[in-house]
Length: 184
Ligand SMILES: Cc1cc2nc3c(=O)[nH]c(=O)nc-3n(C[C@H](O)[C@H](O)[C@H](O)COP(=O)(O)O)c2cc1C
Image 1 (tube, rainbow, N blue to C red):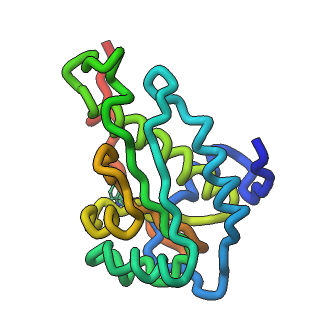
Image 2: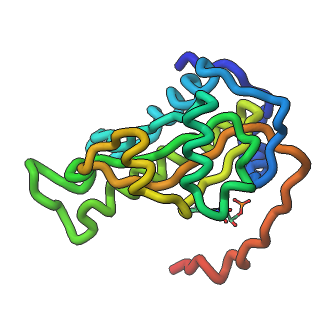
Image 3: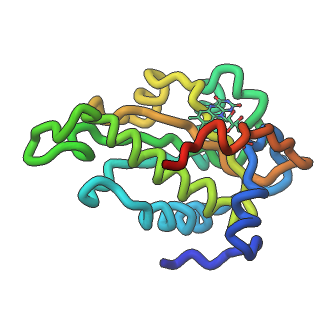
């Protein structure tokens, strides 16, 4: 891996300091080289039979960033100073399929699963590089498809903002562990 920039040392600190950031520092920019290092890290993510169904469309020019800002509905204000906006998609018929046939009841849901894993690598690596992110499920898929010429055989999932936090975000409370875990 080429990725070098690491500001946060421990993995636990990466996990606990990562938050959904909804206010970005307008004075700090991110280079294409840094985004490339970040996306190289996502390529380490596992995927169904190594099908690697995830694709990323990166808005980094002022023009494209402004266009994507208008395609995230109520999120627009939250990400207005984020210098990079990344659209995440997955190819149909890859994860969860063998020789063209659906392997089990989850079908292309495995593509969404792999996409989420890749996105998880992205947001954690971003934090380790000193960046912040917001995953946005509220977005206009048709508008993004047209803007980036995204093929019809890809499902458009999240838009992820990338930037530097402006202030400290809150940590939303989590459920008690025993509410979500059963040991047998
Ligand atoms: C699939 C997904 C979609 C989300 N969509 C949005 C969104 O459109 N707007 C937003 O402000 N936050 C969005 N979030 C962020 C969640 O609200 C956030 O992760 C959750 O409240 C926990 O906070 P934390 O990320 O700071 O731990 C999304 C998160 C995920 C995983």
